[in-house]
Length: 291
Image (cartoon, rainbow, N blue to C red; front, side, top):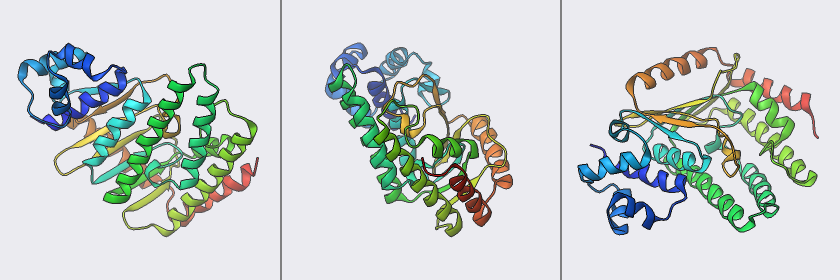
């Protein structure tokens, strides 16, 4: 029984629900101190596991890692994704415009500015700013984790997503001023140039390709020493602080991992790689041009 995994799900639920630790502890019939111990991975009694499964509205089997975890809030999904990354040595990414852990400081700078502006214009400014700060903190933690662990990454980016990224910029769809939108577009161009450079140079442990055929959905296959997970999400990293409608999933079920692994391997065989991929990315940059 993986109590550390259960603790991580409990922490993700706390972020997802917005409930205070005292409220969750009361629903579980434990003290707040016990709740924090459970989040750290200490042994949980079976009757508490049953109550926790009821609280999370999942089956006890799902809680024990056999089923699927569902996330309707981007912040909770990013926290759980960080937890999985912490135990992973290899990541296969299919889809999206960027591979977030490898993005530049320009990406984060533009993103922080866009989120701050949206928060400052929100009706509940304090709460919105706190959510933006929390989201930025989660992304920063994911990037620092990658920089310290250097897990192997094979990322297959979507040409259509990259085209939209260059057109709209970082944090596409957010209502920001033209000045901020311009900065977001410039950051997207800089990011695309960085991606092209990484495609050509192929640094140790990182390979980035461009998909010749667009994926029907984005997903990650993340493998650690003891187990693997599949993560599917409608939440791009630059929309973590936004009110996005969708459901992300994470599962360690063997059949799900196997199917997604096969799809990812086939996609990689057919993807543009190296100088050919870099040339295509630079063609898109020239084609869309500065805005």
